Image (cartoon, rainbow, N blue to C red; front, side, top):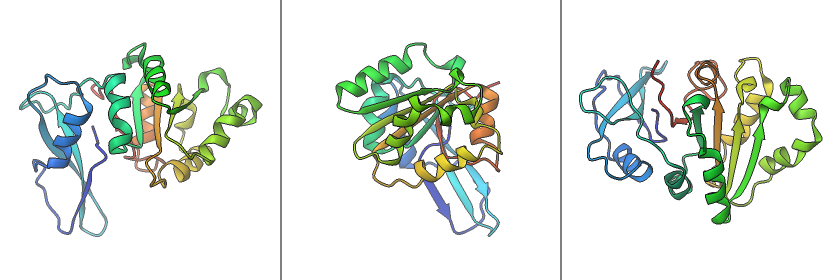
Amino acid sequence: MNSKSLHNFAYPTADATQLTSVATSLAKTLFQPGVNYYKVGVDLLDLSNGKHEQFDMLNLTPNNTELMMLELTPERFIEAAWDINIGILSAEKECLRSDFIARATTLAQAEGINVLYLDFSRYESIEEVLASSENDAFFEAIRSISKPTLLWFDNCDMLAPLDCSFTYHLRSILTTRVDGLVQSMFIANYDSLQLLFRNRRAAFYRSSMHITDWKR
């Protein structure tokens, strides 16, 4: 899992076991209480200038090389997401709790958070999504958000292709905000999420915190 904590090193390093208090704090803030052990490591991304970017990773099981997610409940999500400004989250559809969207939506609305939901599976193409007048309020709200807002991009597999220009438009809106008002959840199948967030050419490359297990 890539957290929102990002550290830049001014020197090349192959050390992938550095511990950071930021990542530990993130784990304890987000995930269920009762888990007494957090293994914290890093994913080092080589940069062309010889430096590295460090992405903190959290692991439930000691000495397990497979990254395993602690369960993020709707309650913990709504309680913590705006406080630490996660920004963009992603989840595999078949691994997400069946009641996660409904429960998180109810909790968010009870806190006065504006909730906007779009199910892309109702449409044949991204062009149809954009042309539908029923989505005007959704996209207008994205452009003019002025209060805490939760955005659901459900079944958003059609955003994954690298030639989808609208995905790049979304990136320009969602990744440049610094006010911490918006939390966005992208839900799709495994292959689509890999293309959206793990392909180096993708608009949202390494831009999300993944909340379901990548394991395959």
